[in-house]
Length: 128
Image (cartoon, rainbow, N blue to C red; front, side, top):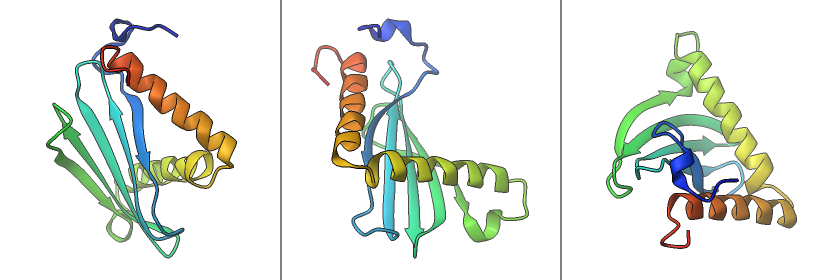
């Protein structure tokens, strides 16, 4: 792995944080990705009774103020051209649950190490 953000183009985003719902099956799962220029993308997944209800994707140029780009809702996306995108995000959320939120402590620690390493690559002067 290269220790410099210069190896990435502006389109390459790395995972830098994840927050799991406080209650299994209900609440908000949120993940943030960042590129070398400091642009961030945040995906907010809202779950109710174990089911993904809504996904909102937002963007920030400086990591402080996020502007919503789009939202996909389970009830309005089914049967439309949005359905594949909704199901893609649903799969990504399921992966986060499996590999982080509901993972064994050792696996969770490895994922946290990956997030820390990504932050260090993006911000070598801050130490992640």
